[in-house]
Figure (cartoon, rainbow, N blue to C red):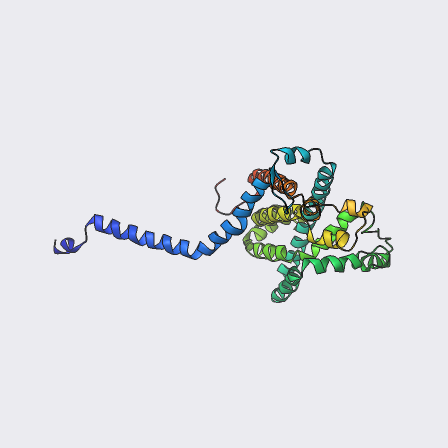
Length: 317
């Protein structure tokens, strides 16, 4: 009885628990406060400003004039919008699956290397740190149809390489090859996922007579599907915003319009031209919001489809 008398009342315990929870919440918000401020000032604020600007005629010099939905109506009448969007979607279709396949292949090789995997992981990741403009200038030389290193290498095995930078049919595949320079980030993610696959699953599949391809298809892919889905989302969004390398290779030093320029006219490049070359800030803002909506729709479709194919360990099926 004496011990029970010394215990604090239930209300006091609850009050102390609420006080402790409130202190933890304040500490958490304190740690993320800088991110919240940065998000409000540098992300949400500019997004709201661009949305308002998309309903105006503004050239960054004079006063903005309200034009209602005129900029959005012009989007559907401008043939270059459809052309730039088509170029971008074709590039996404070429690049994203290719980059994922190359990164997964490299990760599987590293997974078998053993102790040296750390060194090669660093080597593969280093190109990610290279400035994108420098990569674009470098590959403009490597992809040269006459003297480029890639075509010289293909010639050694009897293949006559195409004109990667001038043939309109090969401009986007050439840019996809250029972007493969930076797949090191995906390699690291896939390698970490591969090392989490239980070896017992491979052993059980092998005992059942499954060959290498069957084990890869029915064990490896399902077990790393979460990582595959994550990189697919991230790479798709990045590919829809393709700008640096294409602009450096086809629009930076060249002032005249050519067929290769038109083949490399991606959506964000056209947005950039409208905003900073022609000073159509309102129209460029409308272009930006159209890209935002397209990205949201594509991401939503990918998330919807992923529910059928992505496996998460511990999830009930």
